[in-house]
Length: 91
Image (tube, rainbow, N blue to C red; front, side, top):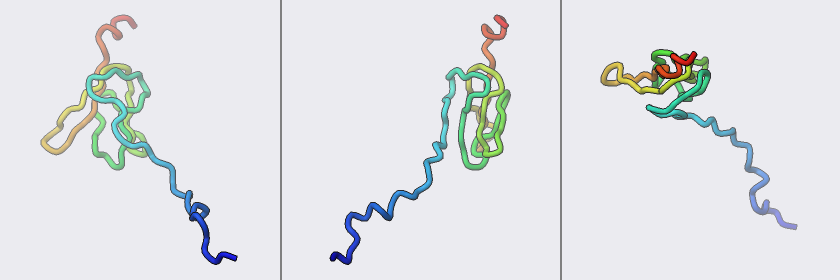
C-alpha cells in the first residue's frame, strides 16, 4: 500500500470566497438610486452629495444621476451623485 497521499486535492478547497471589492461605477456614468458605487475597506473614498455609507464602508447612490469623483484636498477624494436636470424636470 502507498504511504503517500496522491494528488493532494483532498486537502485543498477551503479558502474563503472573494469579496469583490473596488469601484463598481466610474465617473461620468449613470447610476440609479440604491446602486453600489464602491466597495472598500475603510473609508478610502468619502461619501459626497447624494451618496450614502454602509456599515462595511460601501458607498451607494441615494438618488439617480451622474457619478463624479472629486478631490477634497491633496490626499482625500469623495464620490458624489448629481441628478440629471432632464430626469428631474420629467418627475
